[in-house]
Amino acid sequence: MFNHLVKKVLPKCAFRCTPRVWQHVRRRCCPPTNLDHTRTLLQLFVDRHFISPGDNNVELFKRGRGCNYGPLGTELRENVLHQWWRSMTGSRDQVFGINTPSCSTGSHDAARGQWRYLAVTDPNNVANILEGTELSREQLTQNVHMFLQTSPMLRTSLIPGSLEQFVPIFEMVNRKLPFGIAETGRCFQSSKDGDGCPAEVTQASLVWFCSSRTSSQWLDHWARQRLKWWRKFALAPSDFSSSDVSLDELEGPTSRGLKIFYKFPWGQEPVEVLWSRGDSELLQMHKEARSKLQSRDGRKSIPHVVSITGNVNRGLLAFLSNSLQLHKREDTKQKLQQRKVLKLHPLLAPVKVALGISRGATMELRKVCEGLLQELKESKISAWPGYLETSPSPMDQLNSKYDEMGVLFTAVISENTLESGLLQIRNRDTTIKETMHISELKNFLCRYISAADNM
Image 1 (cartoon, rainbow, N blue to C red):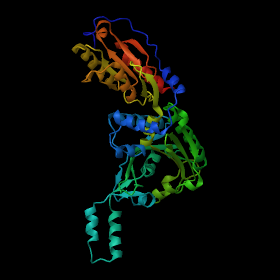
Image 2 (image 1 turned 180 degrees about the horizontal axis):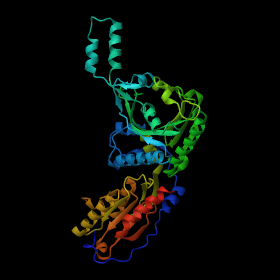
Image 3 (image 1 turned 135 degrees about the vertical axis):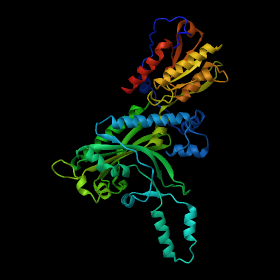
Image 4 (image 1 turned 180 degrees about the vertical axis):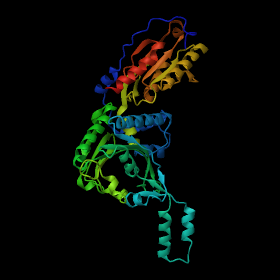
């Protein structure tokens, strides 16, 4: 691609900064845990386009609710969801993905009686009902109740959708246990602030169906797997922990529960909850077809349910909080400054490499960057087009900016690249700068990310 620009191709250069750097940094670093860290953290996410500015939006994000994400936050959320999905559908053969609507009509009466939904209403229609002054109070109440019963409903959990689709998938696996149904999507919860606006949350859910005698073991199994998954992507894994739910916290038909917590600077909050739910909800959902729920294990027993529900919004904040490192350093004028680095795991980092050009840039250098950017995109490696910066900045300032964005590497294209095919690449975690042949950049990044996945 670059033959017409690279006049001389040198032998491929060895690059000494290996993926083991991530493992080394992960062992050494621990993020600060004070309230100043919270303010720095949230402001950084606004400045670097993870979330949109505004006090209300920042507060929603801090509470683990849906908010306005910026370009980097959107990419990070997609990476988290992708890794969650891989961990579920790839960990066992019998996990099947589904997609159900977040808003349903009045046809799901069985589910409504068991699960809490939020009604979507037109205030004008409610006003028209209440204007019937000739009706008694009881009649008005009955009319409003009937109107709400036929109104569209917003789901508050993904679990009902999995329970509803149990029968056809159960038939698909020849009524053999265990198996699971996975889904990600938006749910809505009643506001606790009294503002009347339901809170939007992105959830990730696995509903696992197993025999009654193995449900407790499966709950323990998934608790271990989920804690391991959260810690895999953490710079300080010990900030994630798990504990059993106390008896007074058990909900509905649940007999046992566990929560996975993250230790935020402002306190510990759950990012994922696991419940042993028994079989009552499944029976209620399919009460007219009990025979279709019986497994072929010789006992004709009803499967028991183990649910795993993660708050993706809060999990995203947990990974960001865990990855922020604050380092003291002296600038060129001997002034003490604070270096902020988002050391996100290589699989989660929204940008893998930033492409920049040195001073005295020519059109040829930009063409090299454009071709390299296209090549990386075709390999599904996210790259930042730093060469398009309208106001040239010193390289130190650009490096600081990219560190705050969590960019893994910065590659600088120079006049030397046109002559020799060599570029300079800087590692985010070590700040070490090395020389690499331009033809090796894509393969190096692929190997680096793949190695990080296997650690």
